[in-house]
Structures are given as structure tokens and as C-alpha cells.
Image (cartoon, rainbow, N blue to C red; front, top):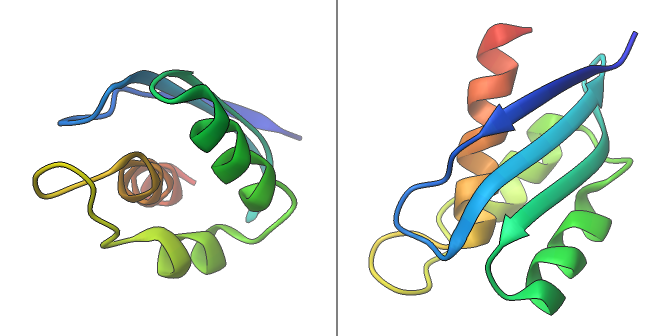
Length: 84
């Protein structure tokens, strides 16, 4: 059964990430706030992929400062993985 998780990102323009997962696969991602085109693009590229694959792809990407929306999505997925 799919589970929905809410994550509040730190140090970026986006305000919330809502991720639905089924097992170890990402079903949907909705990112509230931030650059709409970029966050929609990242979400669509991640949907349907395995959590670990997306973490390894996005973790460490920097924008302003020490993080970015993609990096924060990786952090969200790590937190989700710890709860599964």
C-alpha cells in the first residue's frame, strides 16, 4: 500500500515536499514553492524510480549555499527510507 510523507526542506526556496512511495519505489512527488519548472522536472524524473537510485543521483547537488532542491529531495528520501 502506498504511503505519503511530508518533508520540510532546509536552506532552499521550496517550502514542502510531499512524496508518495510504494515499497521502495517513488510514485509521486509534489514540491511546493521553489522554481516551478525545475521542481516539476526533478519530480517527473524521480517518479517511478527506486528511492536509492534517486538518492544517489541527487544527493550533493548544490545551488545556493550547501544544498539545493534536488539535494533536499535526496534528504527527504533518506528520511522516508529510515521510516519504511
